Length: 361
Image (cartoon, rainbow, N blue to C red; front, side):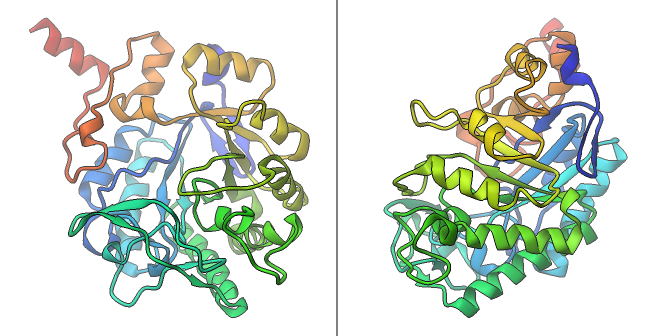
């Protein structure tokens, strides 16, 4: 598996190895969407990754929608994130921030008072979200963004990229899948607009394209990536031709010298998302979903991508890179504590050496 541990450059990002920690919502932010000490420790422990993509983070109050998720629009939020980036950098790691505006996949119970729920069209997502105060609730009926509203949201993303750099992040990633705002614009089932941001595929990918361009102009294209999963139905997303939609976005941002495309396997049978990305994107690929050490190494050795990201394996294995390097057993995570507050099931998973000592006792 030696290829996994070779350094690689993704744009301006210099990675010590090709093992990337994928972004995972863990719902541990404090009041007012501020990262706290548990998050500092969680990311510090996993700094052995060549790159950490920190969890989806709202660029604005309207971008929030889940309970206990972080944001990066206030000074207090930026200060919390700076403690995270300083801890990761002190361990020799690199970290970028995934910017995630949930759009219509939201509940007012998880937003600050007065924050709107917005989307390309006034169509409620046929799903539910959890709130600490009311349990499982239906998503809000969203307000359709005006043209000025779209411009304002793109500016929020641009400012969030600047805020991320000020807080010490090495770059940012735009979340363009999982049924969040960029994907809501891209999909035919959630975008019924007839203006420049709707209609044919060029119009539907325009919001994501302009957002990526805005972030690239703010902090440099070589520090910006984006994440795609063609055909992902999560959060009530339907698209009549998800392969064509994904290809159109890849081609739309191809002229930019972006750091990477973070491409996930498609859940649709017969749609090879990795092959699609290689055909339509000139950018370095981070491959994601379902890899273990040997399969990740084989994918890189065959030229499928430049790096591989791991999500679930990083939850219970803070020292995942070392475990893969030494061929050590991987621990399993506790599903019951994936989204619960506090350190339990989050920053209290031991490194392998500690586990071995405990077993010996």
